[in-house]
Length: 589
Image 1 (cartoon, helix red, strand yellow):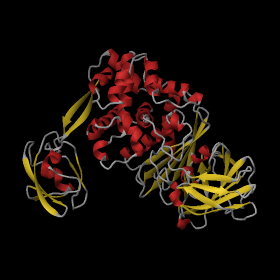
Image 2 (spheres, helix red, strand yellow; image 1 turned 180 degrees about the horizontal axis):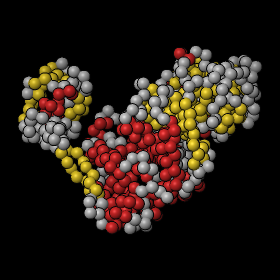
Image 3 (cartoon, helix red, strand yellow; image 1 turned 45 degrees about the vertical axis):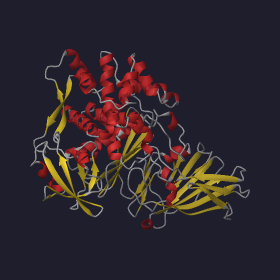
């Protein structure tokens, strides 16, 4: 086990001219303030710029981590203060005064627990380097050393290489920033080995489930993913870092040698939530290949100061989701019925998203840095549509090649021709890889469904595996359709009005407070029951408050309010259909 006990507040170590030295410590955990020191040789420079990232890989949003920096100061090796100025929102320029060593000190407020943030309290210290470690501009490729000063008897879990006791090494700032750390007195750990790689499992928080069972199932997932990429993982160690908390939601972030995942306290209480655990673990593990090694060109040497635009997130996130779930089926963590039910849900989510007819999945990828005010009606999830496209691409490649090739071969092609050559994937690289592997022209497919917003041809593609998509009705839900989303409280604020819905055509607006339908009081709790009393084409009067005025709107309800999508497996599959179906979902040998 790579976990160690540390003495409290050990004296800082001396830097050398080969390393940029980082120290992280804290005095009072309930202040949520980490204390960070960075020592670096000046190398004769008159000024040195240090900056904090404005975003982190895996979250395509400017988050401005510099907002949490406090009490910044700089001194030389004799403790004399040096001059500095802040030249933009996240960059500090230091006047070295001909000092040979520059020592930066600051505090960082950390009080958010999700997989991509940082937290300090009396139970643990958890941090992501992108949040709180400044980098020396133009020296990101220099080796780094990190000392973590913890209370006595605390354990540390991180993918960083151990140098001695509580000191860890990184080959560059990017590796340091890409290696989250948990320090706590109560970590629960397990490990297993597959194909000469050791996989470490770490839980922070109360684990009410057998960790050996978890390890056994994670090993099955690892086996399927490693086999997909040729049988050997591109790392000697990999760390699954988990947080369990009472007010914690599911969230995962990928890293080159680890993943950090948060989950609720009841994560293992039910079969469905246990499936969520393996699903998110599988997704993040697959990212160790797809986005951390196979990556868009713009991610190869990311500029942390500005957005990194790519139209390929549908592939690097959505297709990762596709393989995350497919790995569970191939590993026999879930059965065929559960896997197909997951596809049904993804298709239903996509088909119920009005943005699918407005925003292409490429545009959704490129514009993820933006948060439009009308996002519920204009945006789509590149995770969701990308996962559906992964399925359709896989089956379409199988159809065109008589099952001789599949998306598995595309993934391997990208790994061998880009990742193993230390090259980023160009913006047209996915199309070129699919065409190279399949030997056929996929330009029309990409133009219609990836660059464009055409409705996906489900039945045409699903048929190769003996599947069909059918629209069914749920008799427990109202057939009459209104097209609004209500807040969960008694006030019944209309949170969204779906484009071209009866509510939109009838004049309802986001922000209206719904009072009644035909003079009967309505809120989220009884809306479905109320609509059950009406047939499609019925005219109803909706009473709302708008800008403190009482208003009435006449709305004509439509049908299809209770439809859903069901994936049917044909009972009498042809020999070809059965062969495709079996090879698609079977374990890799």
